[in-house]
Image (tube, helix red, strand yellow):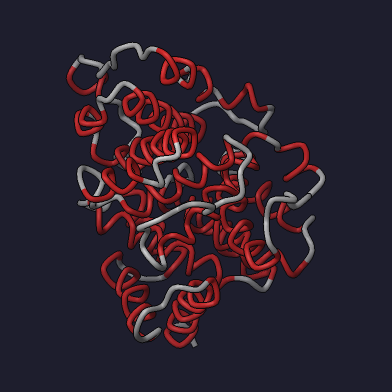
Amino acid sequence: MGDTGTTAFLEQVGIEPTVAPSRGLRGFLRKDPREADLSRRRFRLREGHSRRVLENAEESYVFGFNATLAREADKIELIEQARRGFAYEGAGAACTVLDLLTLTRGRRLHELLAGPAKHYRHSVYLGAGRGYALLRMRPMRGLRRAHPLLRWLVVDGFGFQQGLARADRMVGERSMPDLLTRSHCAIFDQGLGRLLWYHDCAQPDEVAARIAGYPVGRRGDLWSGVGFAAAYTGGAELEELQRLAAHAGADGFRGHLAQGCAFAVTARTQAGPVPEHTAEAAAVLAGAVPEEAASWADAALIALGHDPHTHEDYQSWHTGVRRTWARRNR
């Protein structure tokens, strides 16, 4: 399977980036690196490659969160390129938490997006959603100067973090948090779908069985989130990706899986070289090379016309990608 983006900077050059301890409010907010240990979450884990991939992603998230609190977000550039997206997700969460607690109206998040994270906007907005969830606040409240369409990724990130922190309710009981408006629920499920990939440790049979327990009306968005995580984060071998695609097709949501994968490829393409595991996922889940899969998202965005910004526009963006995939696979 080649390099999946899980080799730590420490393993590559023998130096591990560290951040200075924070004081005051920032010190109080600092995350314990042990939070990346998914066994503390009572997830369905398996030892080996998949678990390392998923926990390395969360380790990078925690690193980015703490580096931002320590005013050392520039150190994110010291870690492996394939893992920086997760670190900038952590940076987005930290900026959001600080902005909300200090009433700075999104200033830090805007500066992060305009500066070092300009090629990682998807990750930053997903992280912002995790920040809202950490404070148990309604996602997007008070979010200013945000991208008119990518801002909806905040709700996606909120869904991921809610599932991570409250798996018994969100996954076990299949609940929906009270903080969401009705229009946000579908996007929330896309984030929850990403979390299911972590919850069941990238095991396609387990993930499919988990999704089958949700109402049919929620499954499409869950499969979209799974497609994103399988392509962006990785953790599955080729044969497992093939089984995942077969499960989604049997459930009637093969296009949703492909669409989620296409958006993951788009995010990876904008950030730099596409990791081998993402290219492999694109071939299996979307049936295309990364450049083609990313072009679907670009074309669907252009088709939305001038000034798309509502949640309906965001969902239409996804629908456009699924239509392109369906036409290609008639």
